[in-house]
Image 1: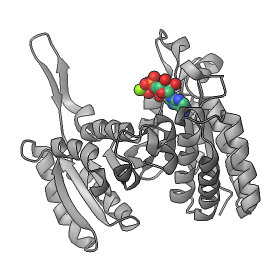
Image 2: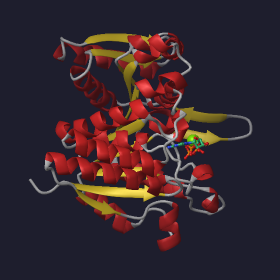
Image 3: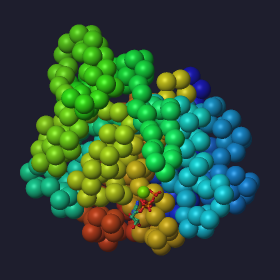
Length: 350
Ligand code: ATP
Ligand code: MG
């Protein structure tokens, strides 16, 4: 196999700071595990507008096609808010070009973040679920769609193969987790939800070790705040997943720490923290790089099957967090100080 190629998009705002931190940490870890990753940094978003006049260049798309994974920090900021083509348009274009059909958001509240969570500590500690959100279909894309003063229309449509692809993904993911899949829908009202249920029940016999259940989205929204420990893998449509992902982020109490992974059927996967470019704190060396680092850990695990390098990073980060934390978690550590501590810890552990 060739040396794995990772396209690295630092983007705007705090993006370059947290990306630099993450690359430094991967580099320290790969010295220990002797795996070599080849990083290709490219301009994307606002910085690409500044350099090339557009947020997403053909050169970047060509580079993405050549790569095994894409690591993205964040794009956008007030500087480009009044532009005709904004950095965020580049992000939608990138996701569309990469055809990422599933978006994964782990919700796990680490020891360091328990005190930030609005949940009771004993619930927060036992919360560990993954939302698998369908990303390329459903009501955000369905036709017809039109707006008029007297009536506006959106359409929720799902083809059987769009559902079976993501349900299968959820079952396979659950095999590596607690073997429990919850389909979240509104099957008492929506036709698309009925098809989701039928497809899930049809595929289930291929995964007899997995427990399958169904929740209405309103009930699921309540349970995410009342008893999130009961979930393992939640799989749901684009709209419901959008809403529940933000709710899930809120119960962790720490927007800066949560990663995401977007899965493509044939091309590279996209890994990015869930937060934005945080222009209000850019350049101050106080950004929390944990969401970016966790995104890289997901990449090592899922794209490269490199549990060794991922473990080296996670173990060092847990050890550092027991001593002190980044500013947004209530600690004293700047972005660079936190990063340096993790690198030192990696060397000490090896
Ligand atoms: P977007 O529209 O791109 O999602 P946003 O303005 O909605 O952007 P963020 O950029 O994520 O949201 O910022 C929301 C708040 O959270 C800001 O006050 C920001 O400073 C803070 N924040 C976001 N990410 C981090 C981080 N990694 N470390 C510390 N604070 C952060
Ligand atoms: Mg936002």
